[in-house]
Image (cartoon, rainbow, N blue to C red; front, side, top):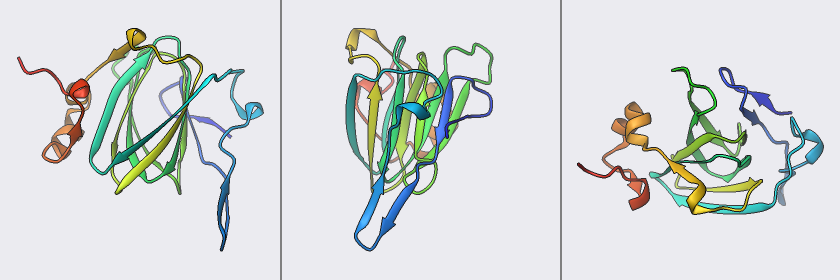
Length: 165
């Protein structure tokens, strides 16, 4: 069952049921009837990131996303742009063994830092990705305490690095 995180009506978390035995594991990651509202996903994407990779913060105005961690552990960083007060920033540890799925309403900025050797995430989206619709914020500006704690070994893409003045 999905649960709203404290402080936001636009971000939900879920712990998936993991069925395992000596052969391995089986996990159901999506069921339409378990969604908190009718959502039609049309695109799946996958990311594999190595330890200390920082991705984001990115948002698309109309897009719902269901993000599932399939392997590893990340600190997920979220900003609810629908909520204009100062308490709109959230950190959630996503780990395959613990809280392993988040649902984001449109207008949520999302990013993460990989804490394990690697992390695999699956994204279900209600809109086809369009670079022109994407908005970006910088982890350095929005989560300075986390950035300063990890800055000496963070791996950022050129797109996610804050331009130097």
